[in-house]
Length: 196
Image (cartoon, rainbow, N blue to C red; front, side, top):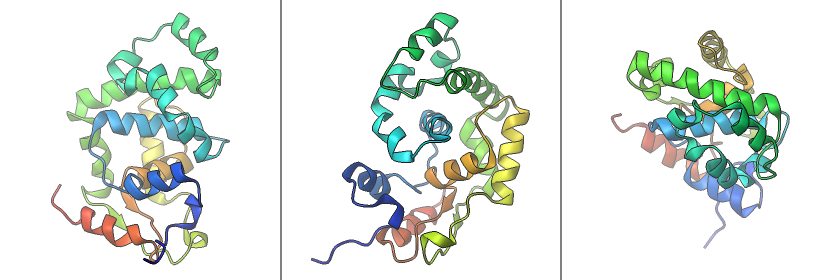
């Protein structure tokens, strides 16, 4: 059986490949999952994605399985305890932004009914299908991620620059950026064509 061709960024790491093969680019409509991805993408700032991916289970334990209603109630004492947790990225600004982002997330849910409804408006409810020949064709940000970043910041979110927002859009399936030679490109495109 021939070896599967994957996007070059995931390399040979088994954890990276599993994430690439099962999650990355799949349209996500679960608010808890969206809060998780937004948090992890923000935690990645200045680091590699694999570093954060390896800490994902620790993040789930530390941040109440990414329940925004629980995280929004975290206290100063909770933040101090998180700063001592070696299983997560111990950056004071990133930790406090996760708590603040949970509060902003709840406000978006209250306004739009769900974060999902808010987010997917940016692509009119349909994932963007790109046709990248190779990794070098990928963009770090787009006018759409600029718009999402600007709107999230206006709503009080932090660690949501345009590059982070584009990575979030890729991960949550708003954009299909699997390269065209990758076995997942067509599979994700087929998922994206289903009614939402």
